[in-house]
Image 1 (cartoon, helix red, strand yellow):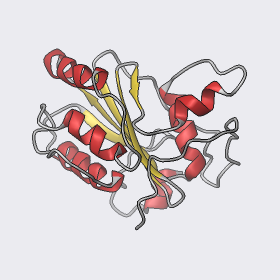
Image 2: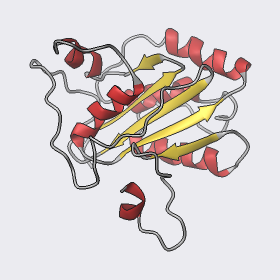
Image 3: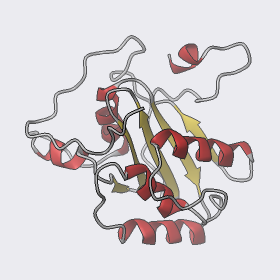
Image 4: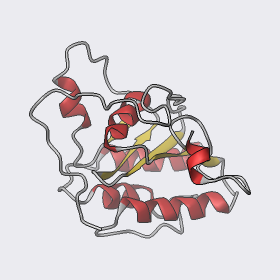
Length: 191
């Protein structure tokens, strides 16, 4: 796998992707984050891999091009989780949303880290997101990282969800669970 992540800075306005067979990007079921909700977005497509996150309504798009691209568009209404996910879907359908409702104390810790995160070098988007959440409940098992693939970050988040100790889950942009039910294929779950 190549390190083609978190490095695209477009010089032209964003052009939406054509409709993909699973209904993306037209059929999205993405609600905005709650006031104490952390949402990690993992784009794990061949064209571009990326990780970003929301803490409440605050976005961290480390080394990403979302806000820069969208500002070039007339009529853009501003940052939203749904628009951010739609933007990530331009690279392909493999975009997951990891959503966690946190107690106030843990949410405040993560939000403070997000607010002071600073700039990120290309290729370090997943490490930046991982370092913001690592060590704070329920992410105690998520280690600090120097460089990490978004797919590795996703595996750590899958492990956190599997413990069942926190209100959290993984969803596709159409609202379906990332985890197929027994006998269901991954492709069916994404539809």
